[in-house]
Length: 318
Image (cartoon, rainbow, N blue to C red; front, side, top):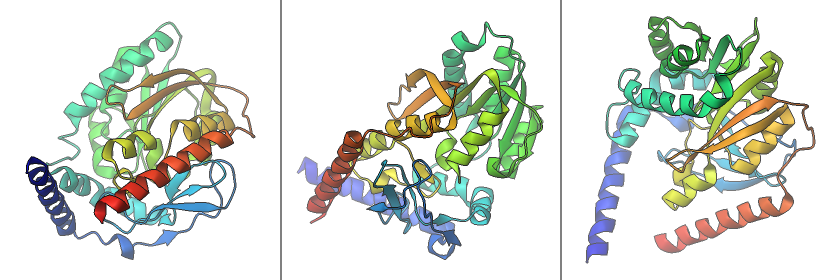
């Protein structure tokens, strides 16, 4: 009886969540989209279907490259559609999903705690080096950049596509660029580059990392974290619940590390976040390895794991 009550409670909670999401009025199916022909990691063009719906209930198709296992939305919304999404939809959507208000003001306490975690991880690698500046890609309201700027005495620049969040960063005294990093034309180099809870959102992860490789100083650092796709679907027990339209990519450790190597970044530190969901890498620039890719055996294990989980979900639903 307790199990039936628990299942009923979860069903009601999910229904309420989907109702809140519908009330936003965002029509994902109507958005302009583009298909991805070649894998951003290995260049192959053969895809395996992972899901046809995301955690919000939108008809979002997620695929993974059969050759290397990189998972991503395909097709995905175009850059112009995502620009509108981050301007008008993203925060209301996340608020509806969690059932509480999440906006440029309410997230600051959470980001402050996150900034302290990042500073603690970076401190041994940054404090004894003569670094002078920082670039925060996808820096939101600037709370993280401002904290790192104070902690390590770095001049900070921030890039973010959401105007409302960038306005908050400006109020903190940060140099701010509104737009997508993919469209950014660099005018200087940086000692520390951070992509904090950002790389999953990018339109072109490889091109972005290759661009950042050209602007990181030879003895500089790149700090980047991923939402580990495997941890996400294991935690939720569902591939669909680990997919979301705001994450173009769904990285695993094996695909993230291979992509970093291809783009010329060598991890010198790997940190498992206490939430057991995010994995944080601190990298130094190195010679790009154009052949880096996950081992075939690991890719096979990934697909077997996904198929087992999907089969279990189908049996449970029936």
